[in-house]
Length: 110
Length: 122
Image (tube, rainbow over all chains, first blue to last red; front, side, top):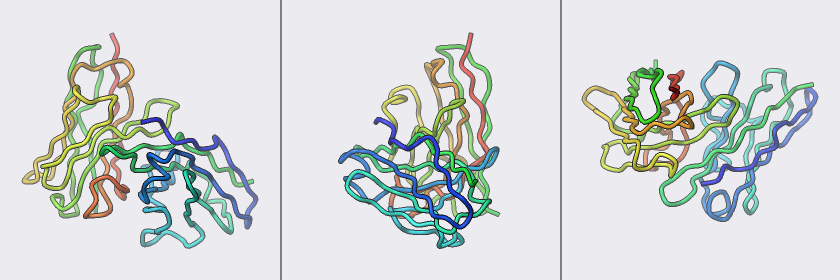
């Protein structure tokens, strides 16, 4: 159950698009379509942004999108806004009835 | 309002035990799987354990298997985590989280509590 690999940081200017990667193995990200993405602001509970690779819960702006290719999942934020600045975490079902998170990516809006 | 409220954290010596609780409100508790997720200071999120809506299926991370026990009382809308043989590396903020997809026990979490701090130290 090794943590998924995310870049420690990512950044973009308002209006731009930024993509955050989440790399695992064929035993987790690559093997199942149960990848989720969470937004975490300081002192607040994580907010579900994407589930099952590319599905958006009600209320999440369509500027947020998810995808997967092989063992790497990605979260893309289009039309970046100041309020998008936060930590983002991915998670994936990892087989054998376990779940694994990524280490988190700090997104900075320049 | 859908809400999760954890309690039971505190300071405990290595080898000691602690029982966390998570009181749920605002949704049909027995319908959804629930999980515990922890975060050590300066680290990322780590999934700890999950339990199905009925309580009949339980799941554990290797790091806590054999030491922690997850349970739920659907009549009280409460989730529990019994933690035994605690180690320094168990020190973290523990969050309870509600499963989002009804038919899948280990998928996404849409509601999280504010967390309760567990410190394992002599």
